[in-house]
Image (cartoon, rainbow, N blue to C red; front, side, top):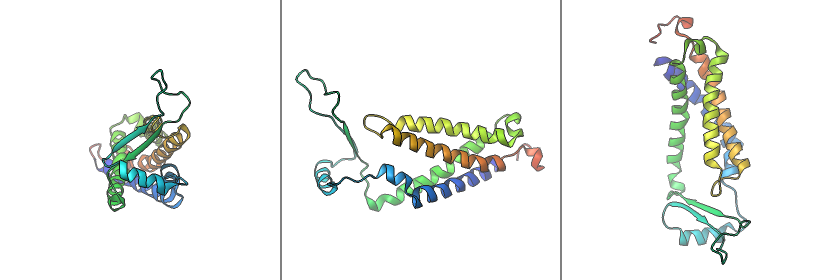
Length: 188
């Protein structure tokens, strides 16, 4: 358990550093998730007046006379969480919890992996990168759709998640080594 905790902490620190640099300084996610409209004030005023309850709202084109939607007209989605700028701290706290819990779960799974996987650094990294592939694929498919992100943005966010897992995996795999290689009992 100690190795999982230390590995998870180390992996969480790597993910935190990645988030600070890639998202905070370079604005990667902000560029995808916070695009601006030229007439933003008009749209904001309209939404502020008409969207009063939290939720996700989808706007379809007007139905054709035969009661179906035009195939080429766009579909728009608006999401309102019910939160304002004063609530941004909740997002930061949740992000930190996830940034440390995800590598901890990966480290715990690695500690409980077979001795063959634990025997080589490369296999330990691949084990955690495999988890990252699953997370990235599930995250990408969940982010793409008619009322979600365009495919390119969803793939970019998936690659972001995968990069986080691989970088954290490099550190977690270094920390979580076979017990006897570090002179510890298997229970440690």
